[in-house]
Length: 166
Image (cartoon, rainbow, N blue to C red; front, side):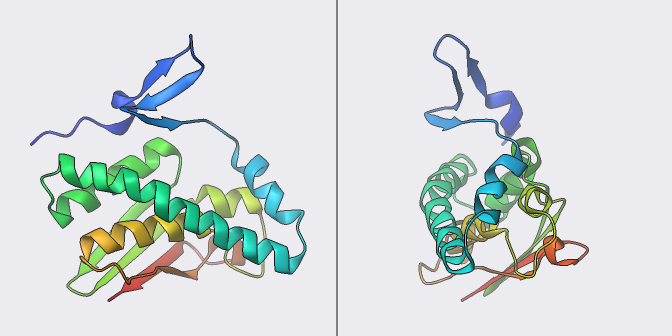
């Protein structure tokens, strides 16, 4: 099965001001503008807001992941290949998955969330954690899986690393 690259599936509907992949709408935004919101919040509010960001991505990114899985015939390997190929087209960095029977690890080079936030003392890529959670639930066939960021480039790590296990 040949998969059309994400960037080639996009429809730029200038008349309506939309960018679409089937019925899923996307928008372009500078990471600094998005992550600047979090920098302006106090510590407690920032943590809660980043958690809400992850929860939203689990839900909405989960919809995309389910569509990718359906297009790939339901196979976990095809899903991970599609997600890894789509991430750079979305500007979400370069993704490399390590999939084991009960564990999924993701390494992200050049996370826009870390780059957009700048130096931090705490992981800031909760959007990617949310997407990895959604993908891991499908790839590991477990609804109780949650991903966490174990290393973040904003904290000085060479790459952002995410772990999800059943």
